[in-house]
Image 1 (tube, one colour):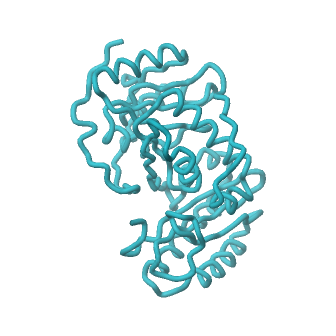
Image 2 (image 1 turned 180 degrees about the vertical axis):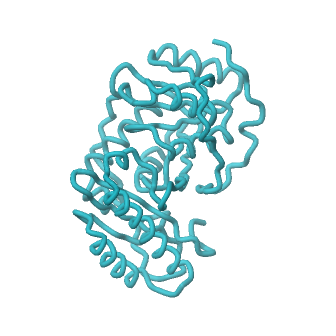
Length: 304
């Protein structure tokens, strides 16, 4: 299975958990196609060959449909690892989209692993105490299923690094907690995803919204950024910003507000003062769609 080795992809240091300034390629080229693998044996063949060559391996899971946010994760993975596996479900649109596959290739994917059937999630019966709130309360089934699927992929691929979006920060924390101390556990890299027009976090559900729905999701980003900015500047308190934010979300006419929280990015404990390390977390509903987002508070001491 010939594949040219990319020299220097893993020369960057470990760095911090965030890298928002990741450049990525949006120019599709049907001539640049990623290798699609559906057979576990073939995937293991690639993995064994790479490891024999001393290559580091990054994993970018795609749970649902691929979107531009995954390209950000992929671009960082390609910068930090010698080889990158993108893992998608068997019905993902990217499997039948030549331009989509070319974007994966041009942004650094070496293999697109698409199992012949959905990956069975490992059972996740218990969540860490810090995960009981937020997604553990309002989206527990989705959270445990996603964690179980990713753990299954980690067991199969044994990557050196796993890449997750900052929008699902709590999921990354759960994975880090559950994998802590395990032999061969990957380093988890959390990347605050690039935002599209209007500040919208790129998620596949956006395509199911009309213009009014998209504007509501765009307002979600503006609300989060305003809260994070005022907390970073020290001009307000978490309690004051949460109260303002809940009023703003209500005015935006979301069909449901699951939570709006300001929490410590290391412990996920509530933060009660400005100037402390913090992230802002939110989950809202539009019809039968649910949107989860999270942004860092970029004060001098935050996220360190």
